[in-house]
Amino acid sequence: MMKIRSIAMSHFGENNIRMDTPMATLDEVLVPLYFLHRYQTEAASKVLGGNEYTYAVRGDGQPITKIVPGTEQRRALKVLLQTIDPGSLLIPERILNLIPPRPPGYPRTRETFPSQTGLTFDPFASAEAGADLTVSLILNSQRAARLVQYHSENSNSPGLREVIDTLMTATWRAKERTGMEREIAHTVDYVVLVRLMSLALDASAPPQVRAIATDKVNELKTYLTSSHPDPDLKYALDLIAKFQRDPEDLELPKLAEAPPGQPIGDEEDFWPWD
Image (cartoon, rainbow, N blue to C red; front, side, top):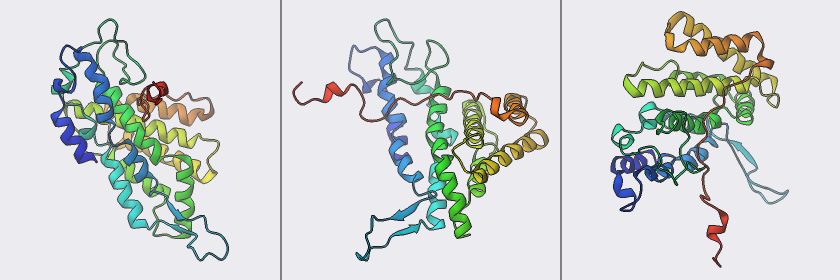
């Protein structure tokens, strides 16, 4: 799906809207293409910490439950991490130059990209929303609990520590990028940090999960202070310091949200008698 998305993005342009239509409306046309992989991402995430089961009844001979093999879980995680690669989340400058501020009569709606830059199109907010679609699934508290459980039952299954370490290697510990990819990489990093702290603070998560997430936040601080002295990361260190000092009183930053998936538009648009 990411290959299909990449090909479609390479062909995206003004021909995607009708003649005499404001160029700004390319925004909402780009949304379903940019998030084309969202449902496949959800499907892949179910393999991680996954369980194959049937609604068996006594005597029907059906297999009941089976933990997804560790190799399949790790393969799913690898695929998921491709969706948050800065190169995948980057909207090419060619496309950015086609989308001006929205004219009067064409306000932003719930089906347009989020923006933190006022009138202009915001490629970093779109990347933040795209990254959170995946990271929120990987660090889902129920999935995290299953990862702990299944690893304790079978050491060949990836545990929560392994999954978080793999996520950190692909983000915070990844090779430094340049240009817009560098800023998008920082955006993804912050999404990972916020979601990791959210997992550590999740009262519905079992203590093992919260303990591992907390430990990984502390490990990240050690890494940033000793191995990665980047002034752009001071906000992350300040956030971690607040987390360590008084986690219960910490107000986590609100992440940009992706426009809703299907069905898109008002339900009334789809009534057969319209």
